[in-house]
Image (cartoon, rainbow, N blue to C red; front, top):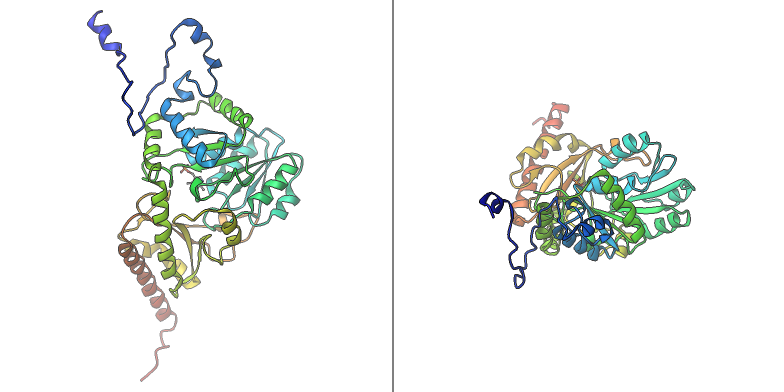
Length: 404
Ligand SMILES: *Cc1c(COP(=O)(O)O)cnc(C)c1O
């Protein structure tokens, strides 16, 4: 054999006896076949076999299996982001003339996708009050192909009665999809509560380190899997095994990170609720959160993401006061090790329900930093708001100081 050929051909080495705990990263576009007949029959290898890198490697299969087991589903597909998980789960099933009902509190980029792309392809998009199964009953018809849920809802955290919504949807022949990113499959299992499709932004808690984007679609049924898989193949969508290995690694500590984040969130919330500038905290584990009883009935726990509603005189100063933060970072995509804050608009993303509060709530994601540092940071931020509110008052009532 010539050296040039030696450079190209990788020798087979023994793998027997090498049983590493860490999952191996298998990279491939091409997968080779032992003979021409095996190549000709490659598509008969089925969903567990290997035929081309785009359709899976042992690394991505390992992650798919892990997610499937946690969701208690039939099969899982991996896609390049949480947003892609939602859009592909919809695209695979919808055609022109169909109708989709979407929870009014769905992840905002989903509204954008539905309003721009689904409408463009002739799908009727209707939003519903996430807290009202009877509204789903009123809006659903025989054209309705999908009822889309997200529980709790993005930003305002309404918990949905998934079993009731699924009963209504199934009675009308519609599928139920549920974005489960806030809870992760550790804290909620939508397929067990009636959904046919569950999506996760693995980008958030499951990978957990803010360094990779990925989404999963898990289905309860082999037929749904085949529908989505063939759409994905035609669209040319798959994920990198390197990214899958990052998610596999992060997932090993998911349970302990979520528990820590929940405890940290409870401590921060307790302090925030006692603060005069805080009107309300939105978090499903709190008794006054919309759908708290459903959360208690169906969920197994809470993560560390919550939203803070401020009193009206404070709202306009929150954004500037965020600059006082030292430990919290400002940014989107929560669920990592670092605590994050992000001011979120509400009204622009609501059409089926009305939001009575001010049009900004602060979304907070608690990470793994020491609690004292996080609490000191929140105090710093709210002190900055207090100073600005006091300055407003002094300007508004320059002569209000008691004369002595
Ligand atoms: C972040 C998020 C997504 C999108 O995930 P990406 O991986 O960032 O695309 C989808 N749904 C919910 C509820 C999210 O919070």
